[in-house]
Image (cartoon, rainbow, N blue to C red; front, side, top):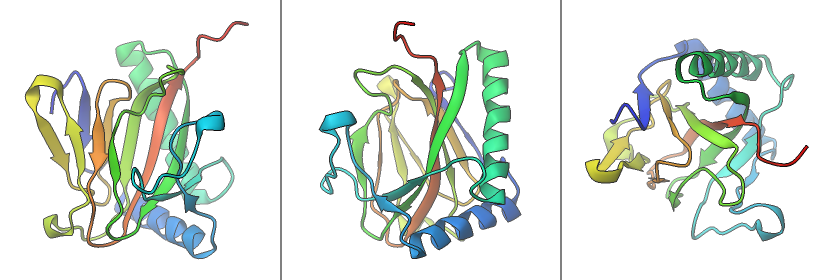
Amino acid sequence: MSETLGHVHRNPQSEALTLELAAECRKRAAEGELAPAAVGRGPAQEIREGIRGDHIQWLEPGQAEASDTYLGLMDSLREALNRGLFLGLEDFECHFAMYPPGAFYKRHVDRFRDDDRRMVSAVIYLNEQWLPEHGGQLRMYLNDQGQYDVLPVGGRLVVFLSGEVPHEVLPATRERLSLTGWFRRRGNEPF
């Protein structure tokens, strides 16, 4: 994949943490805490199953030990990105995402048209024993370089520029879990 647009890291965290996060996501889903994801924001926000079919829950510090460990790792990554790339990233927001079999998310970018705060997207997969025949790839469209598919193998981290890389989630034959988040800079709103 193009070094200027993103990076795929095979195993940035321990297998134990990946399993704990997967268990936490499934627990929250079983307790009815994950809700159908919407598209858009503000008054234009709506659930559009023809565009995306995942169920999500936003993470907040203090919800679970595994989630707090993950948020700490992402804060370390934020600091490293700022040191190396001078991006001015201030915070990180993320949610669990569970795609039922057959669910997808059509091609999109992760930055809203009217809000440029999302700079870098980060997706970590929580799927055990994922095989190519399960589908569910993250398909990234890389300008002149064509497309690049990433299998959602547990522990794999994908990081890319939020406003520069159109992407989609292809349907899978089994449940697909991830933690999806965005490193954000300060917005351009007046003081």
